[in-house]
Length: 98
Image 1: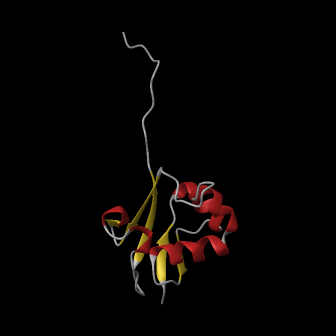
Image 2: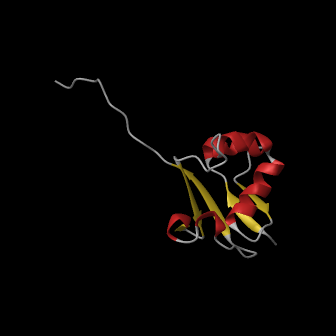
Image 3: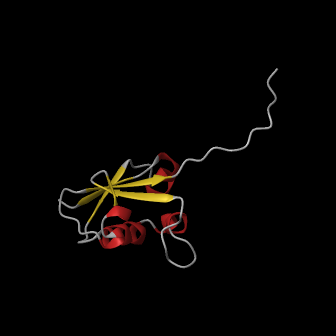
């Protein structure tokens, strides 16, 4: 058993329409690295040109935001779950209501 990475709907097309992918690794960084090594088209959607997770992508380990732990260096164990969650933002509306 490895680490399960839950794939958001917006990115499922890059992982053969799977909801989750099992990978191995001892940290969040290694697990996500294994994911993008297997599904190379996913990398550009998760990482910026400097190799950092894009600012609008949140990563959770067992439902805990990794930003409040050790970030990508957070340790994982077999059976852990990583969630990739793209931020959702509202926009400016030009609709006028009467």
